[in-house]
Image 1 (spheres, one colour):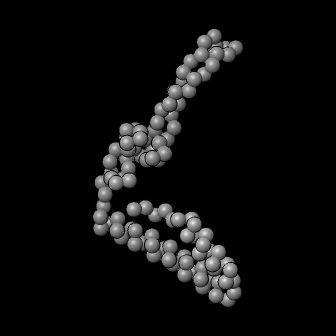
Image 2: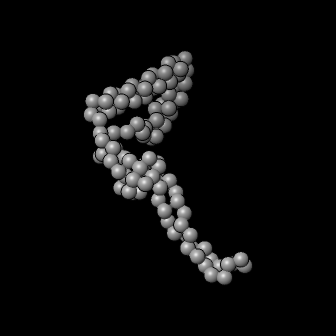
Image 3: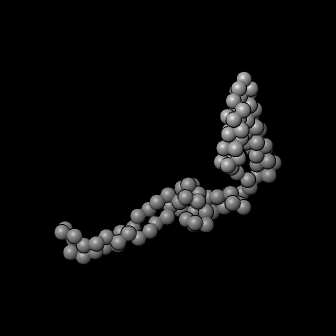
Amino acid sequence: MDDRVDMHYVLERLEGIIKGFGPKTLIELYRFKDELVYNLGVNQMNRVREPRADVKCPECDGDGYIEFDVPRPHNVNRDVGVIDVERVTCETCHGDGTVQDGE
C-alpha cells in the first residue's frame, strides 16, 4: 500500500469541478481535499494495523547506491582510456538500503 494518487483521477475530478464553476466551486474543492486527506488517513491506519518489516533492497543489495562503469577515452592528458566507477543513489530504496516487505 502506498500514498500515491492516480493523476488521471485527480485531473478528472478537477475538470469536473472547473466545468461546474460557480458559487459551489470552492465547496467542491474543499470536499475533494477532504477526500484526499481521508484516503491518506485510511492508508496510515492500515499501516499501523499491519506493519510490514523492512528488508534489504534487492536492487542495491542494501548499500543505498548503485555503482556502474563509465568508460573514459584517452585524451591529451591521458595516453590510454580508463574505466571509472560512478555511484548513484538507488532509485528503488532512495538511498535508504531497505524497502518494505511486499513492495
